[in-house]
Image (cartoon, helix red, strand yellow):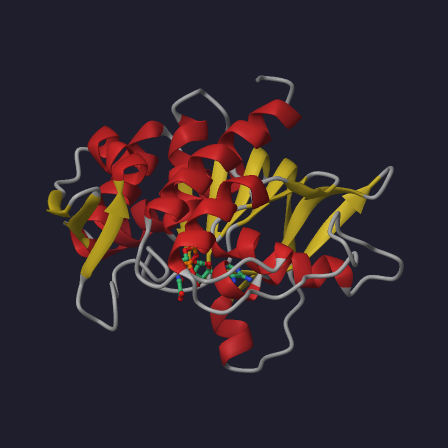
Length: 259
Ligand code: 48H
């Protein structure tokens, strides 16, 4: 095997996918549990979807489980999503199930990619583009390594019809939007409310209602949805994240006119 063939194979194959991702139906920011489930649910319906993840590894907060004990807890509805992915989970207490967070992360990511979602790691979303009536129409990207090494390198862009903020607690994309002159989210104050104190039951029960379009063309999911609307955090229970990813896919399809 010629080393140059190895290099060419990698660069050519990657660039082909990256070029394909430059115009997608749905661009998802963050490959945590909610972003990956949204990507899977969209891709399996034939929607063209790309996920951009800042870090080397995927899964966001899921692989770390609770305080690095690599297990996650889900309730009945979340267990049904794990079943759909064929991730094992056993009942620990009535209605509460325990699963291996590494099995869940790797399986959900693998199935999203096999369904047709393109997942790009080590790329950070640093801004959004808008067009027309201030509708989000694309993402502004840079290699994560440029910001980590504090280099001043200008970004590239991809176009999308719908963007999903799946960046977790920091609600990064929403915060990028509200920094722009006159931009307001569809929240009480127009701003990111910030997440509430830990309260597992409320956090889990409010997340689905919070999963919606918060700015034209921008859908929130996962912890971002709770952070944007001021709902509680919930600790290492992940059913809400999985269900929210599925709902985000549904909302995005509605915006694409496919519901
Ligand atoms: C590219 C980015 C950017 C960016 C961030 O944190 P996540 O796992 O998010 P969710 O919402 O799918 O899941 C939340 C869950 O993991 C969690 O933290 C829970 C349940 N907490 C409860 C509690 O009480 O603490 O994943 C977000 C992903 C991460 O991988 C980030 O690296 C990535 O988004 N990301 N990627 N560009 N600007 N910002």
